[in-house]
Length: 221
Image (tube, rainbow, N blue to C red; front, top):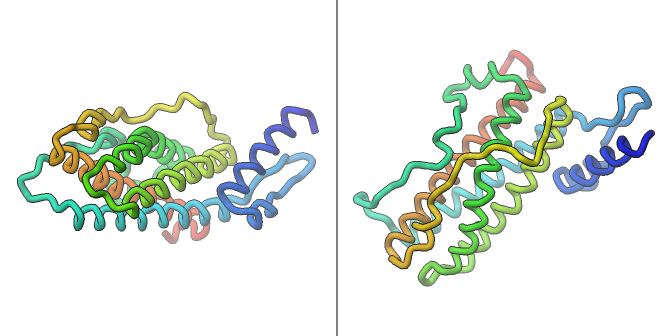
């Protein structure tokens, strides 16, 4: 095995231990001719589980924030920054996508949340009387989102998807609102962003469940 291949295998093992846990990392299958790979059913199963946890945390965050900082119906709601990312709206459309198209879409979505989540953590500390539980939930969501992203990159390599560091992402322009000195405007911006996070967490979890079903049940999804 040459140096480049060893380095690639080491990276896969490192990422798999992060994404799947040590027990799952031991399931790496190697062959002299085919190289090394991680079984896709295991990868999709773990990805679906992790996305489900992210969706649960996002839902709990949205509920807690709504109870702590209730918004009235006249509040100004901004459009989600990921609205421009084209994605299937019904199951029949989703089933037509290839694995590569699915992974590309999910990586695109997750990359688009990198900066918003980072800023959400910083600005959560500035919210008036913000409970530590809100800050902790945002931190957990960001950490697990990054882990899921690395896991999807592993799956991407498995299906021969070219993974680059310069991935495109949806532009987020909500930072000035999140940093507003107007307490009410800041709360509305926070509420909007958490709402959009919940929508995308649900979208990602749904797509991963569709992919998991396809790889385990084929045409019976």
